[in-house]
Image: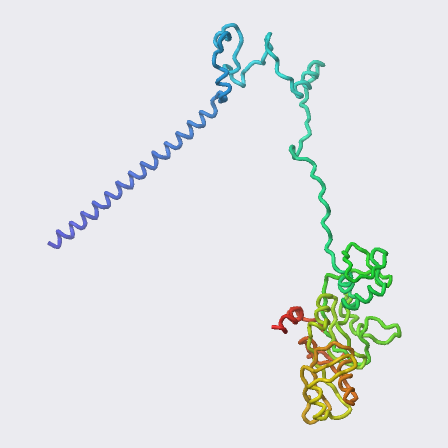
Amino acid sequence: MSKNSQFEKFINKTRGSAIKEQIKQEKKLAKRERAEAIEKRFEDKRRARSAPQEQPSSPREEKSKRPIPGNPSPVKAAAKGTTSPRTSSPRTAAPRTATPGTSSPKPSLAGALSRGTEAAGEKSPKPAFQKNSAPNSRPKPSLPEQQAPQMPLNKYIAHSGISGRREAAELVKSGEVTVNNQVVTEPGTKVSESDIVKVKGKKITPSKNFVYILLNKPKDYITTTEDPQGRKTVLDLLRNATNERVYPIGRLDRNTSGVLLFTNDGELAQTLSHPSHEVKKIYEVRLDKDLAKNDFDKLLQGITLEDGFISPDALAYADSKDKSVIGIEIHSGRNRIVRRIFEKLGYDVRGLDRVMYAGLTKKNVQRGKWRLLEEKEVRILKHFNKKDKK
């Protein structure tokens, strides 16, 4: 029983292999026949393409072939000796001869040239025609030149590294700025880079390479770009910092030290120096004596100076053992505001150091030294006001 079953399995396996082989051969045969049919079809197409063929006639030509009453048919015309243009192959057709009563075709320029040279007994050269790269193109009308971007005059001056926008506006109003050799007194006048702008007779050009520098200002340096009296300026400390013309953002007194920013970016300078943006500053103040507790409280409540009311944002003793050293946070940009606050209460400021400005400190920057701001710091400065008001 077991042998028979094993034998049947073998037979079935062999039979199945034979059937598979038969199917495989049939598929090969069908594939070969299909390939031959395709090759034959392409061969027929090649033969038909190589054989001369008549050009297909348009419906109008077919209509013209119909016999017209009173006119001889094409067959009769052929019998009389006139050849039909469609009975001869294009390659072997004899040149047409004009018959009486028929209009001859208009001579072409090339034919006229060839006939003229043949009549003179010369070999007819092929006429040279100038190739037109754009046969259907017409000369394009000249478009008006794109207008150069314009900006207000005070912004133009600020981007040139002369001063901030507010100081630039004052320069314009004072009549010290000319545009194309004409004095302009309106700071909002629109100018472009093609205009010739001069400040105090010197031509200026806005910079596209913005530079941002943090300086730890020492004492005895004045915050200005130049001094007629020949005193030391903060720019003397930045001689090797950059080739661009930079200017300080805000001011520090001659005897005030600490963080001072420089840039040629007029937009950023306007943002940081404008009072509406309320940029925070922290100072370390050294007084000639300890600050009394009642004066401490008065300062927190605010005091009135000759130019208006002022109240610090924060106030603290920097050292619990030495109450003559005070830390004060303030956002006002008024001139000498910190000194005047303590002088109002009868104190003499012996030392004043700005330790923070717009979130930047003098950490790792020695007195009289500078460093370039990092890209991340510049981004924070440009969004300082938005971040502060959220």
